[in-house]
Image 1 (cartoon, rainbow, N blue to C red):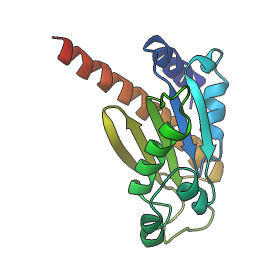
Image 2 (cartoon, helix red, strand yellow):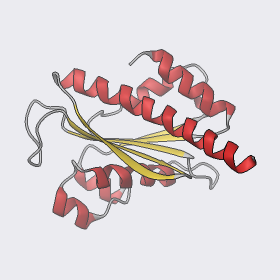
Image 3 (cartoon, one colour):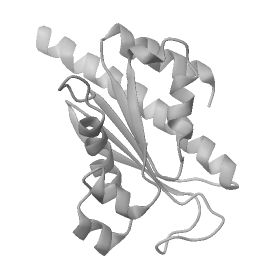
Length: 172
């Protein structure tokens, strides 16, 4: 992912006074690192949780234990719950982050929970709602992780654009 996308996202979030928090599994902190590499990110990036272990997804982020037991960590519903959970976990002064992003999946080289490498689910949570995006990526472990970060940033930009469009509709 180009740092331009991350810089654009930080600038847009800052301009709209939105904050962002991330919950990461397969990216292991790479997404948070991408944000904090942008000068001025502290105006909008509240923090993140690297919940690599499945148990942390439940105990820290509030992902339903029954869901994890039934489907495993590589699931779109898990990604959605992670994204919503990190908004709350990374609240500042009683204010949850407006945007929560989550990554879960399989970077490889081995299969996990019956899923091949490249199976990725992104969670996106905002005041507009919660959604997930499922991806089937190709490449080695570093490539899959990098593609996941790039797509997560693009989805965050999309969410912000859709929020702005919806807000403009309500003002009309």
